[in-house]
Length: 502
Image (cartoon, rainbow, N blue to C red; front, side):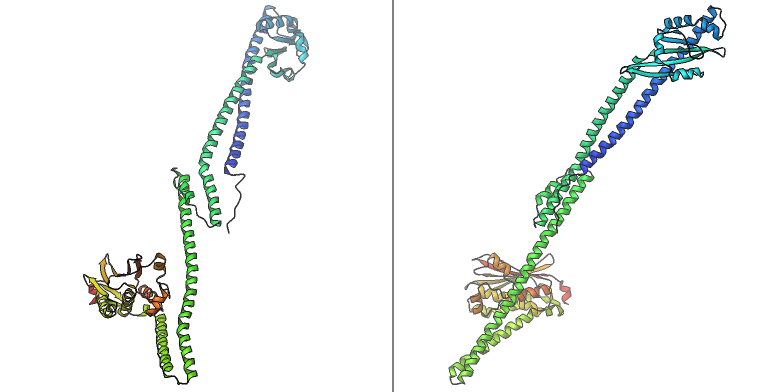
């Protein structure tokens, strides 16, 4: 039973596309995280390098101002020159800054900077460490708050807090990040399309195989076999595993198709054989019933007459004897169709001698129809078999040639040997056989012209017996004929060497 399934709605191509898309999305997400983290690290490293330079310059300027003002390296002196420190550092770098004491209280600088409040950077500076905080007040702006303790000769004098506008660096980093993202996205999309195209091209034969196999299943379920489907696979020019799979699948389907056709032929042959067997029994019953009916009819007439009519008695006895003889011969012929011949010992037989002997014996019968039997043998032909059985085949073939041949014609028996085989033909001139008659001529009880055959005493079993005998001798028998012209019956054997006759 074949199942006609619907095509897959979630096939390999879609599965592969989804898997690839998932892989690319996951890869893109991981790549995004790595790029984003790395660019932020580079940004912070660059800010730290700039802040280190600012810190070093700031300490240098504070020392110089203390020396110029002949002040001591203490908090009090730092407080006194706080205004000068703020002014000099602001002029130096153009940055907004505040000068604070060690407790974080404002001494001098930019008042607006105090609005920024105390951030983490200032808290860490109060603890003695330099630190910075990045803020983003606007989408394209980044401010860095940098707090550093002023330590001179291992003594903390105060804290200086800067507000540095690093929007340019931020924009540059972000543009670089966008460029990398766009480039990576373009590469990902291009790679995805190329892979999708390659996978689609790779899976195209598989989809084709699936489509064709589905069609083959439908054809087999309806007892059809479309060879054009196989041609589509055989013509595959791929020189890889897919191409080999297509060609192998084509061979497999072709083998299945041939086996399917063979099964169909076997089925038809079985049906035909069953019909022939039934026809055989019907014909056999009819052929046996006919003489029995005749015998029974005359027996009843003779019994009723009680011998009063001598003519009836004589005629009845004649018909009873004739019909019983014919029935006896028919039974003998049926027995001849058994397998007894295969158990008989086979010996080398001179087929040339046997054929000439049969021709000589049947020439008397041929004379009644003004026919002549001719033989043509260039050498003695030897086969392995049972001579009496082979003689029976030849007698039957020559006898049929006499019965169905035209008067005033010749019957020609010819034997040749070629390539280790012997071919013997019996040819006559007559009305010939049609194609259908040639196909059925060897069936039991089949007669080309039943009325004409019965007149000649034929039961339709002769050629069936001949075929049975040829099968016993591992040979073949056949017929070739043209209507209105000639008919040739031929038998074919395997030849044996002359030395085997010794």
